Length: 513
Image 1 (cartoon, one colour):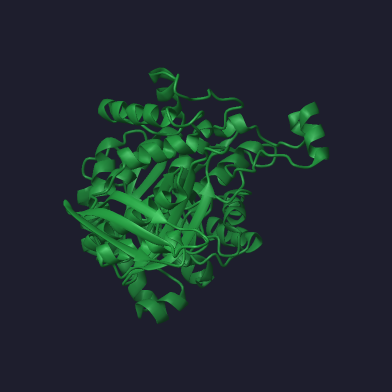
Image 2 (image 1 turned 120 degrees about the vertical axis):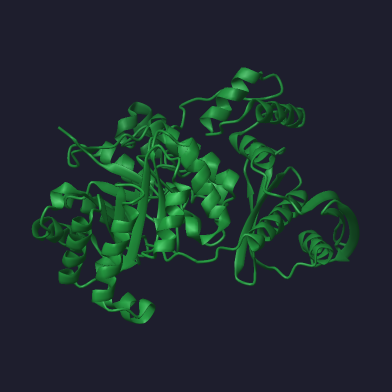
């Protein structure tokens, strides 16, 4: 009989700590709904004390989500815990997640505290959190670089203080599977009463071993895995939820475990996270990458045509990639459009659906076939808007071999129309220079990328930019059949997100587990 492994999704918390991946409250709520549909056991919705925006996101998610536990992260300070308790007050299944560093490296160089102080703070924090809920999780940050004897002592103390889940994070992606197996095995052997709690693992991917280490932890006795969709997260990211789940499902002959994840929702969730965070999924990404179920080699193609099992260890349908799809175009009706929206992970209100369908019809009049990327861009532009200071009203560009590229741009800034023009090294450069002049931004362009997100000569191009000002980063997407227009839209979207983030700066930047 298979044992249960709990899936703890931290895309909304640790995933958001990836540079430029911040989400608005509305975006977080949309993703939380999809994570609930996906079937994760725990949604770590945010770090409530860090900002009003994060508090509000956790509060709203806690009020709405009923099919999963909703978790808020806290340091061991009582103010953090009280704030989380307030945010989770209306949750059907609340969890408070308390953490503190335990490695000597962190104690000496970051916290300036002794082992005794950390031990005492952890116990007091867990006991305080239990005033709000008995469902308390405790994490020993940087556990894999912590003295083994002290780690045993900390886990023992957390258990005795009343923690129900004890998490062993590989915070900096330092460990390797064999070593991690030893850490979990020792805790299982030496901590009295360890079977009364759920042991959890939280692995980062700095050496590309996050998934391997997580599975090693499960094999050694952990029964919760903390992970993120697409593996998004700080630095090199976290263990990828889709890889953990599909490894457990595909290799049941060796891994006798099961999850309650509805794997057919993996791909829609992956696509939604890609749009919300602005992080493109690499083509060869396991499970959800564009090439995950593509076959180029003649030998491979021959084998797959004879029997898919020759070169496919799982089916695309098992992760939510249909073997065939309805082709959407100008003759498609509301039913087909609604079905595709659901497949892509969008849960629209009646009013939002009407608006999105109207925009879909308008786009369908211009393009022969509408692709998923078109629909995602359309809905994201309409449904998940953040407060917008800047609006693009007009763009005209001249460029060629015999003329100096120039752009004339009209924006609406806080409702007021402004217009100007600039020359540049190319049409995109001229456009960006004009927008920069009009907005007065000091933001530095960190990344500019262009992709053809649909095929054919009527392809819709997608532009992604990332900008930074005073240490605050923001990303923007733009899509259009004219790549210059797409570039302008992406840049303006990034400026709007930057403005939003500057006005909602986190007060305390949480250390990543």
